[in-house]
Image (cartoon, rainbow, N blue to C red; front, top):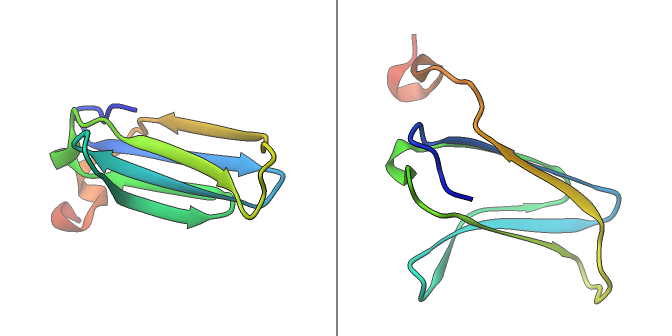
Length: 89
């Protein structure tokens, strides 16, 4: 997924089984973990410095070689700058 100009994205995983998921940045040579989570849930990205950056998502099942079914959504939420510590009101 490419980070929009706002730098705001929400990632959400829903699964019926035990899963893990990671979000990475990459320079095409090495992946750097941006976020790591075990199980269902969400992650809010609020980093305008990452605008235009391609992020990579990995979803996997713990200690299993079989496939796992899951729903994964990524979207740009409507947010205002004063919702964050640097610009809090």
